[in-house]
Length: 83
Image 1 (cartoon, rainbow, N blue to C red):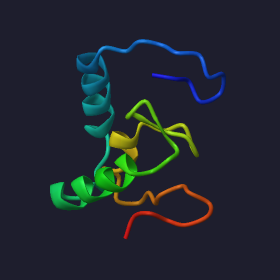
Image 2: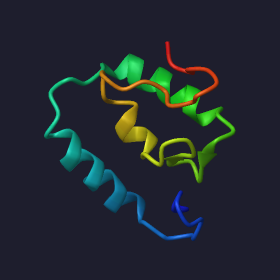
Image 3: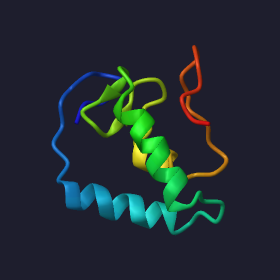
Image 4: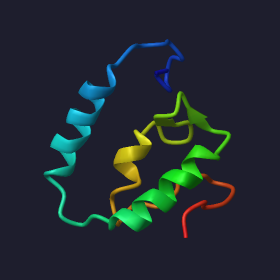
C-alpha cells in the first residue's frame, strides 16, 4: 500500500488491515448495510484515484472503512461517486 502523504510503499498484511478495520468499525453505530457498502466499494474500485486497491487518493482513508460509514460521502471534489 502507498502512503498518500509521502508515496512510500508499505506492506500491510490483508489480515492485519481487516482486523484494524473491524476494530474501528466496532466503535461506530451509523453504518450502511451490505448492499450499499458493496455498491460504494464497486464505485471506488473503478475510481482512477484508488491507490493499491485500499486507499482513497483524495482523502487518504481506507475505502473499506469510509464506505461502511453512513455519514461519509465520496471525497472526490469533482463529482461524488456514491449515490
